[in-house]
Length: 93
Image 1 (spheres, rainbow, N blue to C red):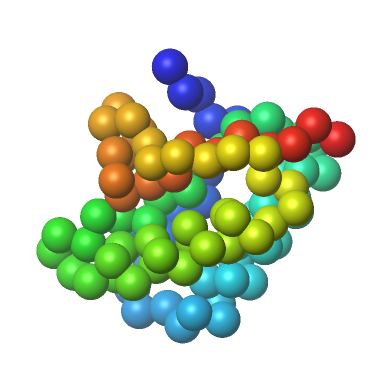
Image 2 (image 1 turned 135 degrees about the horizontal axis):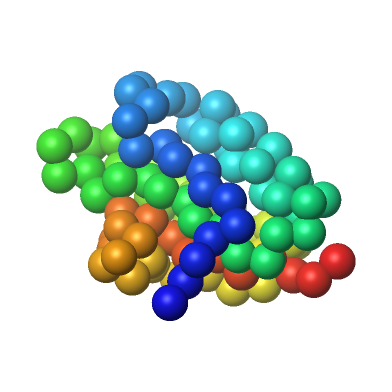
């Protein structure tokens, strides 16, 4: 079972620009690293009722792949949101 130390939720933010997504993501990841969190959850939403999740999910996936503090990530289990979220492991600091 995956129990996150912290969560970033884009699910109900309404329209958000890619720049703002990147800024919120970067700040959140850096804060979690400083706080020595080991695992976090990033919720994008599935995009079923709106296209928000479908727009944010690929950007978040790319940011996860490029971030130096990320050890690994995968789509969340159904318990944590399924394909509408990412379970993320941070590197040890």
